[in-house]
Image (cartoon, rainbow over all chains, first blue to last red; front, side, top):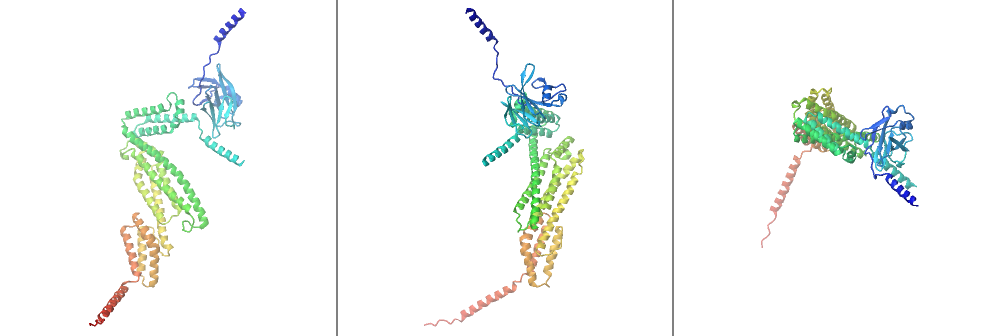
Length: 152
Length: 424
């Protein structure tokens, strides 16, 4: 019994020291989208926020073509919770990514235009992201999908 | 169900209105940054007080235009934001002004004129669009009415809406003509000196501004529109006098402006050196057309009342032909007195009193088509014609006087013949 009590106490002390430290609330929203041309190696580099990431897989997922990556100009914006919303002209979807160790991981793929977007733009409308496409009705997006508005 | 569908329609239409107002934040920021970059470059390259003033006015405009996006710009443009970007431009301009030795009061005055120029230029552009639409409406309506009644502007034709349109269009054209010259004046005022006294760089600057605000283009457009208005509306009488007056005012303003522009073109490298001559010839054509229409209208005034005058195309011919006609009537004693009297009364009641004496003669003097002496001469001749056909009153007066005298004499005789009352 004595041994059991000592073991439990020891465990409590050990786990208390290892519990994750959470910093909340946070606001990671970018005021405006970044419009970045993909380079020949499939990288996008943002000077203002000082990051770069390879998007070859994303372009292949959307267009089934990874050869002509450098012709694509991506538009991306980060919402208040820190998720990255990415799309481009002719894309049918808006991709929502979350940051992981050394990269971005797809959180949601939101179908917004069956025939592809013509002239998309992403606006920060906290807590959502607004998707514009020419004269079409704007769509409000969250990491879970379409928050308001209808897909085309 | 009907109510629901109406509500849905309303929602959709309102929604469309709202959607069309949506704009990309990125584009707004890009636009602001591009304009500020361009102003900054202009400040660096400014060599004259006018260029500094233009930059100053541009800063004012951008500050006003983007005020609604201040919150976005403050966040998006790091670290300066909206306020500091504008502030930096002003600072840069101040340094440039000091380098050039420009006095601040000069800048303020010229910047104010620059703002006026921009406002006037916008107004001219707006009026161009408005007048084009009115002209198209007038043409369409005239065509419809002509199809229906075969004539325009007769008292019996229901053309109130057309008249209103014509009045609006004429006002629009007049306003636009005045604005073009006000705009040009404001441009020249910025330089505050004769073209001959300007440096080459100033001449180039002024020429550039004139091109930017399409001064000569607007003058040409104004002339074309006025000629089209004349042809489309087929106005008569005093309306035409107004148009002649407008053409003369335009010509006189152009006479003041044309040589200055010609001087500028001569000093520049532009290929538009004969633009001024083109405007001169267009003005001559406009003048001929509007004058021709006026003389035709005056001739028709006589013709419509059955009086046949020889045709005339200018003031001297008009005076000569009318005088000849009146002389003929005075001396034509062979005709029946009654016929002569009727002809005069027709002239007097239908032409002379309501139109010729009250409207046309004064207008023709004002327009410089006839002189005051010629006007007086016509008036005297009409008086002479009047006395030659009106039955003379002299014999009537004699009869009346004689009759009066007779009555007095009879009364006097009766009074004197009264027997004296017998005395008791």
